[in-house]
Image 1 (spheres, rainbow, N blue to C red):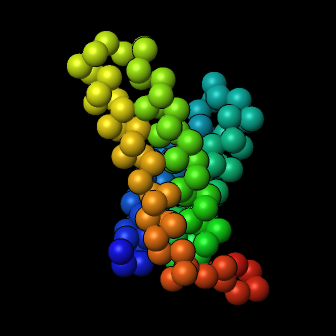
Image 2 (cartoon, rainbow, N blue to C red):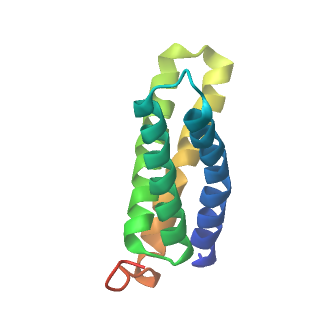
Length: 122
């Protein structure tokens, strides 16, 4: 597995981060939204942007922040779909959960090619 797969994860993360930016800017411009919601949206946007940039530069900390939550979410999705979803469709949900668990396998396989970064972790 090449390290370019993590760069692809970084590009995907940053491209999906544009959706978070639109939500955050909409929360700032809406009169009916609370300030806590706007700050929460901006914090999530900044955190996802930092992880996406870290993935582009092949940083170990970004790989951990990217793959571990996806692994936990995928495991929960696969496990909870066993009894909540009827039979033919729970196989699809379990496949989706297992697919979300795959970035951790990629992280483990290319761990020696990743670096912690410099003084500021970039």
